[in-house]
Amino acid sequence: MSDLRQRPIVSAKTTTPKQRSFSSRRDNEEPGRGTGISIPDIIRVLVTVVIVSCGLSYYTTSSESLLWGYRPWFTKWPEVIRYIQGPVILTPDQLALHDGTDPSLPIYLAINGTIFDVSANPHTYGPGGGYHFFTGRDATRAFVTGCFQEDLTDDLTGVEEMFVPLDDPDEYRALTSGQKKIRREQDLRLAKAKVLKQVAHWENFFRNHKKYFEVGKVKVEKTQIKGEEKRELCEAAQKQRPKRNE
Image 1 (cartoon, rainbow, N blue to C red):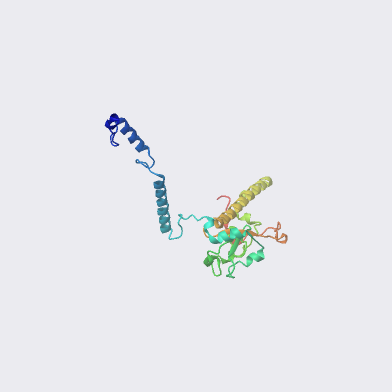
Image 2 (image 1 turned 120 degrees about the vertical axis):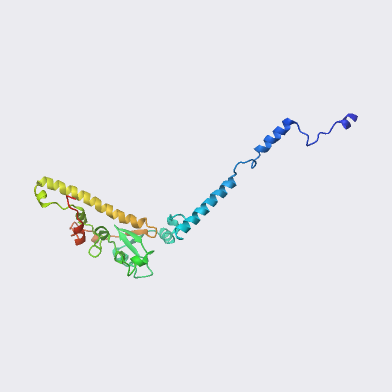
C-alpha cells in the first residue's frame, strides 16, 4: 500500500517527445484544420463569380439579359406556352388572319411553309409597319427576289433564273448545241442551290432571332400545289442577274 501511495502521478501536461510528435501529426491531419481550401469556400467563390457576371451582363446589355445575350427558349414565356400547346397547323386562309389587324391574335409570317411568331415587334410587322406586307402569308419568293409587291407568294417556280448568268451573245452563238445544253444544266443546278441557300438564310434568321420563334407549319391543300408552269421574274430580280464575264 505504501508503494502505491508513493508512486508519482504523471501530469496530463507531461508528455514525451515521441508523444508530442504524434499529437502534432494527429492535429494536422484533422479535417478542417491547416491551410487547405474547404468545399464551402469554393462554393462561395463560385456563387460570387456568377453573381458578378450576371450583374455585369445586366449592365452592359442595357437590362436585357443576365446571361450575356443568351436566352434559353424556356425563359421566353410566349415560347413556353406554344411548346406546351404544341405546334399550330394553319391553312393559308387561317394564316391570313394573323396579320396584326386583330389585336387578340399573334402576328405570324411564314417562310418555306414554316410559321414564325413576330408579335414581339409590332412596330415593324404590325399594321403600319415597314414589313407588314410579309405577315399573314408565306412570302418566300419575295424574300429571295426582293420584289415586295409582285412576289408575295410561296411559289418559287422559275426564281432560280435570277442566279443564271447572262451570256455574251457572240460567245454564246459560238457554242455547239451540246455545249449549250451542258452549260444550261450546270447553271440551273448552281442557281437552284443558291435559291435554297437564300431561303435557308431567312428561315434561320427568324428561327434564331432572340424575339421571334417557330410555331408551326402551313397546311397546303392538294388543290394549292403548284404545277410546273414557270413564273416570270419580276423586274428587280431581272436586273440582279449576273453577267457571264463577271
